[in-house]
Image (tube, rainbow, N blue to C red):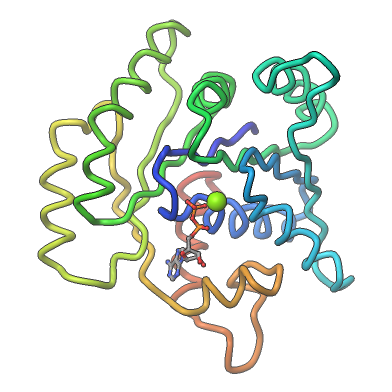
Length: 223
Ligand SMILES: Nc1ncnc2c1ncn2[C@@H]1O[C@H](COP(=O)(O)OP(=O)(O)O)[C@@H](O)[C@H]1O
Ligand SMILES: [Mg+2]
C-alpha cells in the first residue's frame, strides 16, 4: 500500500502519524519504508534513532534524491515506483512547503491520511486543501480514500466542536474519522526515541495513546 500522510499545515502531526503507523505495520511483519519528503527530516532522524535499538522491527527510510539536473517532482516520480516494488508498504511523510510534491504524492498514493489539529489555523487550510483533493480525484478519474484524523484533541471541547462544524461543508473531499488522537506526552517521547507509542515501556507507556494508534491502524489497514 502506498500511503500518503499529508497536509500543507506544519505541526499537525504528519510525522507522528506516519511513524506510529509505520512501526505498527513493521511489527506485524510487513516490509515498510518511510519516504521523508520534508526538508526537516523528522522521520529520517526518527529512523536513525530507531536503528540504535536492534530489538525494534526495522523501518527503512528514503529521502528524495534528485539526480543531477533532475527536479524534485521528477525524482519523486522515479523513486516511488522503485520503492513500491521493493517494500510492501510505502509511507510518504509529506513536508509542508513544496505544494507540487504534495500534489504528486497525493495523486500517486492509494490512500491519504490528513492529520489536522482542532484550531482556527488548521481550519483555514481546509477549503484550499479540499479543492486540491477534488482536483486530484477528477484528474485521476477515480476517488481513492482520503481521511482526516483530528490530532491533539485534548484541549477545549468548544474548539473541537467548532472544528467539526467548520469541516462539515468539506466532508466529501475531507471526511473526518470518528477516531481521534489526544494530546499526550507519549507521542513526543516516542518520537524522540525512534519508537511508536506502543513500543514505549515502563512509566513511559501510555495505554490511551497506544489504543488510539491501534484504532487508527485498524481503520486504515483493516484487520
Ligand atoms: N497527539 C499528540 N500529542 C502530543 N504531542 C504531539 C501529538 N502529535 C504531535 N505532537 C508533537 O507536535 C509536534 C509536531 O508534530 P509532527 O508530527 O512533527 O507534525 P508535522 O509532521 O505535521 O509537522 C512534535 O513535537 C510532536 O511530537
Ligand atoms: Mg513532519
